[in-house]
Figure (cartoon, rainbow, N blue to C red):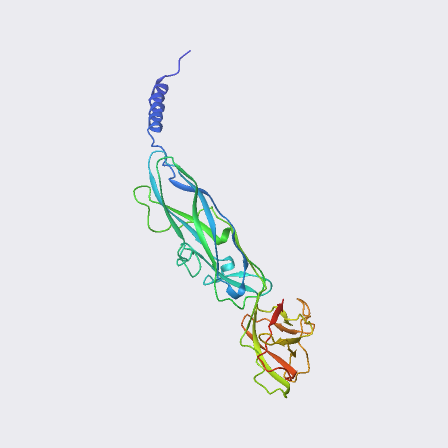
Length: 338
């Protein structure tokens, strides 16, 4: 029996050895460099806002964790944290939503002076995100690093309607990009591709009902003869209540008469009292007392706030001036119930 030739087997072994050498000489795959695995933002909660003095400031905290996946080289990168506006809504100013069409203006800033708006490189009027340069040595991590978001409900919103307001920032409203220079100084421009890391958060505020009142001048019945009767005069008070807020005004003389029937006192040892009556109208037919509550006018005056001052007239009459000559006065408390 003849034997098979061995030459093909001898030729195959050097070929396999060459292939093994080629595979062993292949370079290692390049590491990824700086990446960020997580980011989060605390709630930006303004709490209760007074619409008559609406300027309110609070802060929130951004936390993030990044690492350098290259175990051989130091990397520098620019982190860009973008905040747009839900639904592509306006960003100058931003708006929180309440019931129906109610809106409350606010803004978010990168600096404590609240001059640099925190925007987005992807959408909105303000295209400047928060930019943070970072350098990590080979294989290093930066865990739970933090930055501050500075929030402000804008002033001058006297027409804001009492309500609960909120603005919810979901994944699509926030974004983080990492522009890795892979060496030296961090880049000065943001990356072009968004990562899958977001920092969802909520902005909220509650606008409270509010009223203020002031007397523009005293109600002066003038200087009259002792024979004078039905001496009348008037003045006005200024009431400012939050927009759409119902209010009810009561007047209470110093003798605590809830029907608005007061008495003016003289000076020194003069014990005389000059009776007078408070009224709601120029015809002096409707008395003005102090039975108003937060839900009912009673014998007081009702109104609805607009966010700006409203002038309300007050009338008084003294039936007789037949008393010892003197200067007579009394104090009346204005109670605004709302």
